[in-house]
Amino acid sequence: MKFTYLGTAAAEGWPAVFCNCDFCNKARKAGGKDIRTRSQAMLGDDVLIDFPGDTYHHAVANSLNLSAVKYVFITHTHSDHFLPDDLEFRGSCFGHNFISPTIEFVGNEMLYQIMNNKFLPSLESSTRGNISATYIPPFTPTIFGDYTLTALKAQHKPDETAYVYLIEKNGKTLLYLHDTGLMPEETFAYLRDNKIKVDFVSYDCTHVLTRNKNGHLGLLDCVDIRNMLAADGVVHDGTVNVINHFSHNCGMLYDDLTAEAEKYGLLVSYDGMVINI
Image: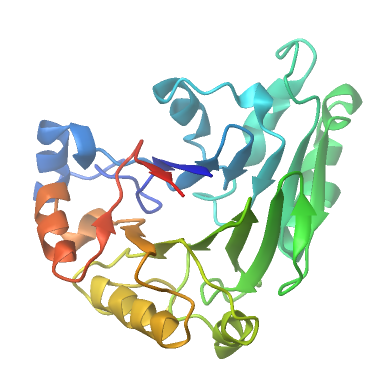
C-alpha cells in the first residue's frame, strides 16, 4: 500500500499565510522540506484522506490525476480538512474523460449533512450526479473498493464526532491519527480488544515540544500514545511511526525536528513523503 503525505502543516500552513515570524521567514528562505501545505494524504492513486483548499496545488506538485480518485475519507469538517468548493469543477464543462466516473466522500454525520443538505444541492444536477457522500458509524469496518475503513473516535472538535481512521488493504494496516488529542478510551479499547496490529502510524504532532493532549498533540504526547499502543500490542517492532501536522508556532524546522524525533524512534513527515507499507 503506497501512502503519500501531500500536505503536512496545520490549518495556517507553514510559512503561515499571513505570518512574518522568524520561523515562517526561515521556512520561506530554506524552501524544500520546510515548506508545508495543509494536511492531506493519498493512498495509491484513488483515495484521498481529507480535502483542503490546497488539493489542487497538491495535484500539480505531485503530478496527480485527480480524475482517478474514487474515495475521499474525511476526518472532520474544519476547513483545512474539508473545503469541497473545487468539486464544482467536476461539471461537464470543466472535467472530461474521468478515470473514475464517480467520487464518494466518506465520514461522520456532520460531513454527511453538509454534503447532502447544503453543498450538493447547490451544484448543477449534472455535476452532483457523480458525487456522493456516505456516513459511516464509528467502530464499524466498511469496505470501499480494495480498502477496509474503520472510523475511530478522535478527541478534537467538540461540536461533532471527529474521526481518526484505521485503514486496511492487502494484509497491511495503517492508523491515521489526525486531528486528535489523546483519543477516548473506547478507541484504544477497540484496537486492543480486536487485537489490531498496525504497520504504520501517523501521529498528530501540531504542538511539537509543547505537551497538549486537548485536540492536538505534542512530540512527547505522541511518544506516550505510541507506548500505550505498544503495551496493547497494536504497535510492534516493525511498525513505522511518523509525526505530522505541524504548526509554525512549534518553532522547529525540518532538520532540527528530525534530530529531536530520532531520539524517540519517530520519523518526521514532509510534503511529498512516500511510505510504502
